[in-house]
Length: 469
Image 1 (tube, rainbow, N blue to C red):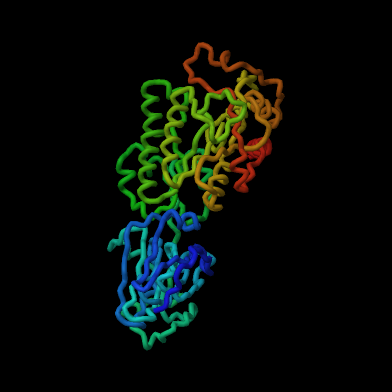
Image 2 (tube, helix red, strand yellow):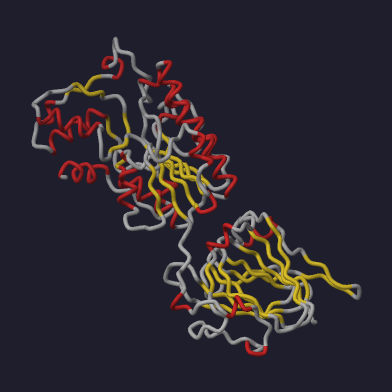
């Protein structure tokens, strides 16, 4: 066997999305050779996903011509040759446009290949005493076998040009019996779990993901955030993402003893449980944050501002954000003044206008509305475009306004006089009432999310559309 020594560590994209071929530096002399088969830091710098392998398997093959596959398994694999030489063949058996795509390559110990979940893997040994090794990011189990997808080695559509004809090769009876491509059921994508699916944002996420078979929606009755069984009763290996659209949002009630306990149970303890699940299973956790994590003294809040919450609700949200930030794969989506399907400020003002009531509305709290359809679209954008993990502000675009300004807009857009709305300070409005402190300035800097290619719609446009509906 001839091995090319001292290659530079390099990667090459293949014809199958996500399948990447790597050149590995092998160092040798008259005694033999040595290589770093897997080196996390270097591989990540090269662009290999941080797929968190948990098991290392080796297949030893005594004779040249031994052929195994084509098996698509429900986990990712990093494959290399320990000794000998192989002809590798990979077929995309995942749902999607690339279903049936084929890539082949001869490999010796100076190469490795990353194979994502659902891509069929097969190899044929080209030398005696060939050892084939692979790292996987899930533990093998008998239950997992039911999720495998298989393709016949001699499938005419894939048309793999095996160096040693299959009739002369060593095959198992099981591999000979695998179906042709036309009979293969593609492996579905891992699931996205949406929590709080019946809330304002949850309903918008239902609309954004309408028709997507891999998205599961869980209302409070389906997933009780405060129940331990919710976290232990699922096979989390089947999920890629959790979108946490659930929260305790009763700002004033959170200041009471019972409300404080409820706010921390949902916004902190439950979030900590989700973070544990996400970290343990390599799941992406999307968490929705709030402008209430700040005291509202800055004119505009960017993602790196230090937490300065004023009340219990804001404190519980800030604690939840801090927990989520420790999850390796996380998006914290920070919003303000949320408007969606359900009870909210805009609906209240429209109702008052229709009844001829002239309200007093606070005029010293300044911010932007965040319509749930845009929050949902922003979350979907971050997940689908490969954006860097981290914190993203997400509200609608436009000049920041006071609640009084927005109320006047609602009156005008519904055919009533703007003059019916009277401005009043927060201090005056809440005088004599038990109320949580509010940040006076809530405008969020949108530079970071715009840099990902997402352009939030104008709040004025969305408000007009919302009232027109």
